[in-house]
Image: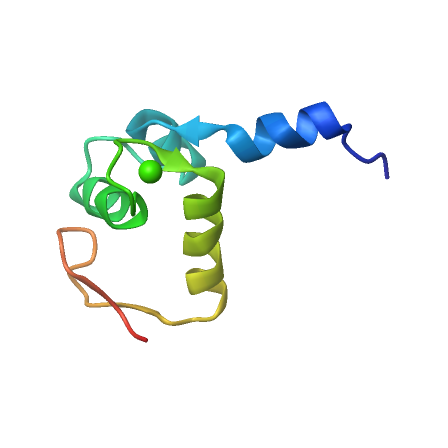
Length: 82
Ligand SMILES: [Ca+2]
């Protein structure tokens, strides 16, 4: 397996996703309420973009199974437990 160069690593870490790219990464439509709410939740600094770090934080939350959804998650309801 080939490793990334330092320059490529910095580019990955420094990249930010728009809501359209975020929706694409989740294989969902950018105008869905789920994507809008999730994007707003993940964009912790509120700059209108999801950083690599913010995206990783979301993945960790999913991986730990602490993200709980009601049956209406695709409408607008979600809860993250501490
Ligand atoms: Ca952000």
